[in-house]
Image 1: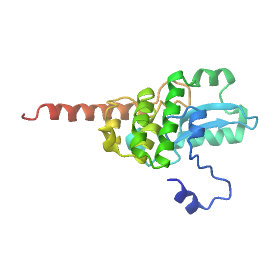
Image 2 (image 1 turned 30 degrees about the vertical axis):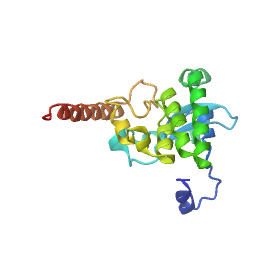
Image 3 (image 1 turned 180 degrees about the vertical axis):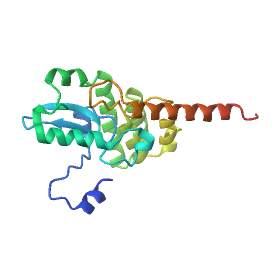
Image 4 (image 1 turned 90 degrees about the horizontal axis):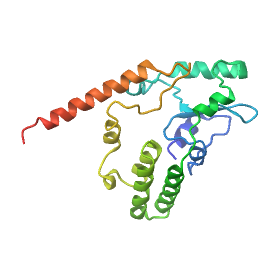
Length: 209
């Protein structure tokens, strides 16, 4: 697994979960990485899944700074239910994204595709990866895994091209820790990316035939 070498290098004293079957992502309806979900000592969700960066390595291309999230996490660890970042049950319900029937069918196709790859039938897996992506195009986990376990050329596109197709839309759902309904930096980076994409398309269209 991709995370294995980093876990071994860190030599942690706590258990490290490697979710080879994407069970956690399926159960908690996750579509991208990194994703965090806060669960308290009673087993109750106090913040549903949201982008959770621990460094600023990708801030320039996502517009998501790590410090606000890490500060919020520390606040919750210190103050528990009294933390302003811990949501009330009704707030959790409003933010929680419940899987649809299409999502369930997408998961089934995705699991079958992974099984076929693991048993040496990669070519047979491609149609199921494609169907999973069609049913749930917002799942970057599906796209990333499909391209890793088979080949980008099987899909007539690349991961970078798929990101460029966002054309100003957010790659990650809006990280809104304060409940304001906005994240100016994240939204501006998405708009800038959209402008760059439009410029590329216009340049291609204006090339001599």
